[in-house]
Image (cartoon, rainbow, N blue to C red; front, side, top):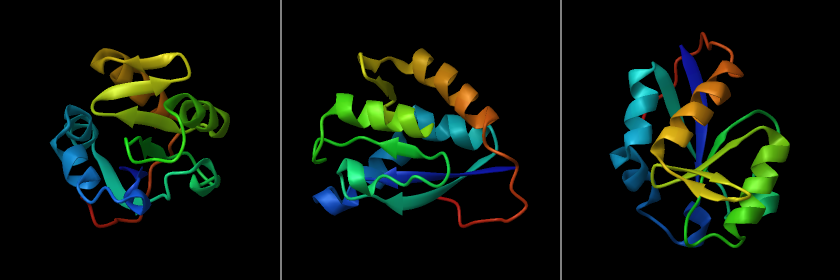
Length: 120
């Protein structure tokens, strides 16, 4: 089983980001593929994006950086950036099927985890 940390922009005053993510098809896709999701917070700026392991970063209108800047930083770190069932890249946001392809490639980089976590 794979475990992935998903970072929500909670430091930017968006208390519903996590619940919107749970309603997304992408969250269902992760669950159907046996991925345990660990909810985490990021401050909405590029400096607060974790650098230790690949993660999923959920974009928000409340963040303190542009989508392009977020996408560039995530690409540099090997992270996956998304928003409302869309893949976020430096060239823009792309529909669901692009997100699924990117997610499959991203999940290939994540090792199986023997440690259970509290799932969303």
